[in-house]
Image (cartoon, rainbow, N blue to C red; front, side, top):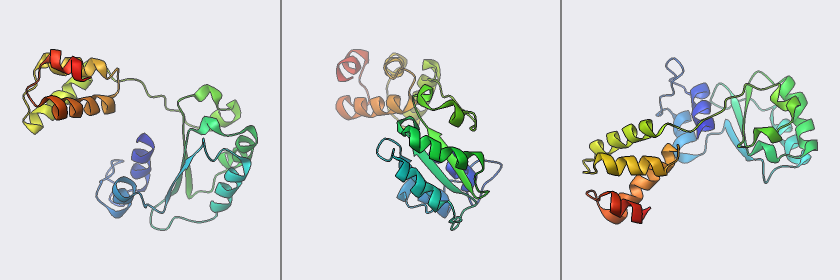
Length: 190
């Protein structure tokens, strides 16, 4: 998700001070239809061989079709083989000006130091329970549901720092318990 948001920020046609508009054809292609020609997503777990990286490097010669950059998102990058990392290294040292790479992993300690040293690194942390509860409160008010503070606190705690999980839990609670369910019922649902 964050890689796509960054890709939209870099390529938005209506970009206002770094914030993607969310509505132009590039943003829509990344968000809704998944057919943005200039954003290539690769699963490192299933494309972990040196041949896969060489194919990616061969495609670097193609300039973006409609956006500013051709962005390559490599998810689960830690799953690449040593040979694949070595093949990628030279490209990361001197990427073409029209290409950007986003390397995503939950296990950065498995990415070679030679790769990490050529990247800007952003480590994401869990969100505070209080902030998750505030967002759930906004959602509940927006939707007109009647969940109390204790119920929302329970959902926020169960999410363990993940807003996406919290929103999923809230959906489950509303689906299975209705919009006036209390903490005891929520505990059973979750």
